Length: 360
Image (cartoon, rainbow, N blue to C red; front, side, top):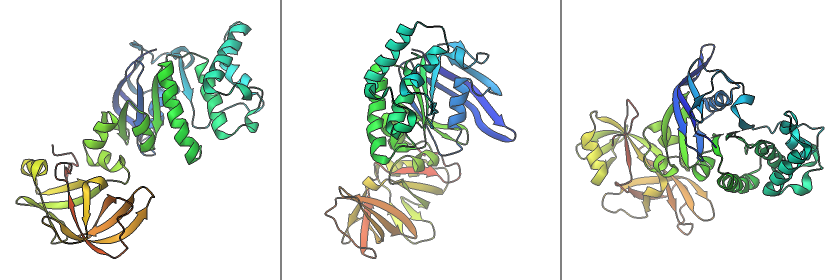
């Protein structure tokens, strides 16, 4: 196994900067997820590590050795594509064996590797079938098996679950993570799906427009986002962001006369703010809905209701801004109802409105 490292890597396509001065280390045996919206530079970063793209500047290292000048084959990494890229005229067995047949290797060893991988992936009964006879999940396992038989130093995975239906995607997340732990192979995984990132990654690196925004454990990314980009991208439902003006020890929502009291750690952040314009971030689980007025609660109106079975998500209009609240399914409100809301000041987030950076 091996450590992967990128040091100040930049990659452009004409005037488009796909990866901008990007540095990252994936530790030995680690499962690290590159997370970001389309166009963030995730796939370009992955292809640069694989050797499919040449960086304009910067250094790529595998197992502490620079590999910029090495071909993809010489880097000993396995790439799992979003589209499985299986040969339609070959059986699953031959697809998995193909990378081994390209190099001199005894047939007995090829057969052993293919069957060992098939046993781990539970596709032994599918080896004689061609891709057209396999489901999406089965094709995905064959593509993983083709990567496994090489016994690479690292896996590079480019949104391999995107083309699966929701139920299969959920089960495959667990299987992939379990498989990676069993094999102990360093893995760099690309996705735009924050649920995949949160449930699978040992650490998450959030990208935006080719730049690294934050790196940390899923809990760190969720609970302590460094800027508005990370805060708004990670979490479902999305964090509510309220543009406010500091008014003493309170925050007044812009364009309204609604003032929110700041106490505890939020008050400390308010006092550390260097500008009057700030953005208050509230996650749905930190907002409480009241059916009658209570101290420190502000009036709101139910804008939309999302019953999800085990919980309800309410979109609440407060001072012209939408705030989301998560409640038990038994707590029933209707669109247009008048309510009051309060929030947990210890778990609220405050950002500078101009720089969009977190005020600690």
